[in-house]
Image (cartoon, rainbow, N blue to C red; front, side, top):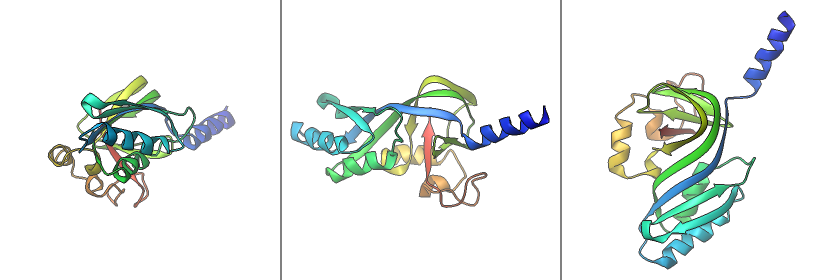
Length: 179
């Protein structure tokens, strides 16, 4: 019995909380025409983890579907938009979750990435849920100011785990999200 408990604990430690991002809704800023939208669409489609992109020209938005079983690189999404000459105004990621406990101002590992939840109530993520990235390069300056005021941890300003981020190695990329 003792050996079975040790094996179970090793499995839990070895595999972080289960969550797989399946799609995203991206709102870009600075678009003025269909050519602008096309530039972002093409830039996003070059990313290896993206299966498809559908443009919503009227709302300057893009619906992105991720390839199943691949790691989503959130910074690469932003970089694709910036490489096309525009900025991210909002990014919402939708995923399938299985028992991921989140609390306000706490860090959670989902897959290989770390997320700092801000301005949320304590809950367990089960099934399909959507989170909004609130890092400074993923929303307007006014919105970022609002979310950054909701935490005392310095990582929200740098995007990197600091000495005050418990359980995460300092310097690790930290995404800030809300639900």
